[in-house]
Length: 246
Ligand code: PXP
Image (cartoon, rainbow, N blue to C red):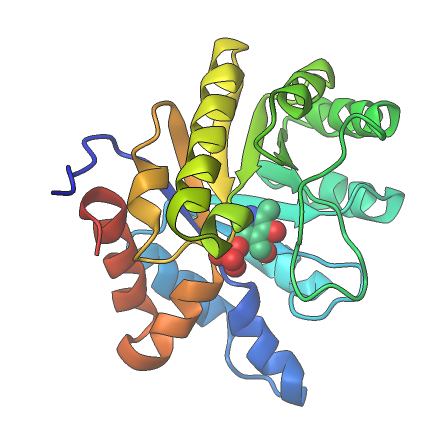
């Protein structure tokens, strides 16, 4: 029997793939503002958008528009580059999530290597924090990486759940245990713990039930479900799945 989740984990809805449809044809639809308004009406606690270096879905003007009209908190995902730092400092979202980026990847395939790039990330965290932006580092569920993230001064981490999402059986259980351990370790260091990537209504409950989990950022599966039930209903179903499973 699946035990329902008592906690109230926040849902950040990632709208990148609504804009993938627009960019595929260079049309003016679907409308980003309409997507934001619908997501907030359906109960999104925040909206996440990834301004990629190749601008494959979200465009610069989308980010500025979102900042003007959003009523919930904005989470801007970005690579650790000077260009993105400058945009973030101008837009001033409530939250920034620093992610690794490779031009040819289909999506963000792994967590940030905070150990190798410690100095650069520390500088970025400090510049964004001075502007009152809560910085999150997207990392693998690994104690050494959590320690390195804490050393940069970032107040938040987002644990990469992609491996968990792609796994099955015992390997999925093992990955879930790694995520639990990393979340517990991060919380003991005073970090806020978020998670995301590859989550859908069928696999989200175990992640939402992890102690200390603050927020899940979910996009692809919500947009896929929206094709059949509409964006608002897809978001409501995800919120229910985070509490009760599917
Ligand atoms: N969190 C981060 C840091 C991401 O890069 C992504 C994908 O853009 C997500 C969460 C959402 O992943 P998905 O689209 O698989 O739900």
